[in-house]
Amino acid sequence: MENEKKGPVHLRRIDPSQNMRRFYMLAIQPTLFGGATVIRNWGRIGTNGQSMMETFDSSEDAVTASKRLERSKRRRGYRDRGAAVKDALNG
Image (cartoon, rainbow, N blue to C red; front, top):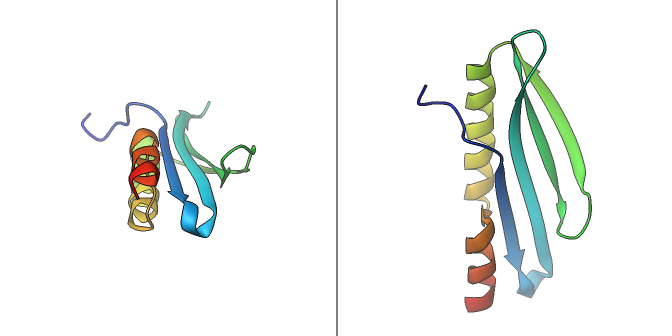
């Protein structure tokens, strides 16, 4: 399946001018009943942050929701783990 995710997505948003150092993690886990759960974890880097789990009847629905959330976060300035650090050092 081309829709299937390879693993968890780890994003960061670092902006020293605003004292902002945040992370956002998305993962998909199968359920015992054939569905899938999107697990979100977010907060300030260095803390445990907050978590939310949303269960879907099919894995395709979970992948769609996860991709939608990832696009939303990228529009808000979140970048892949390594890219966020490089941007903070250069900017």
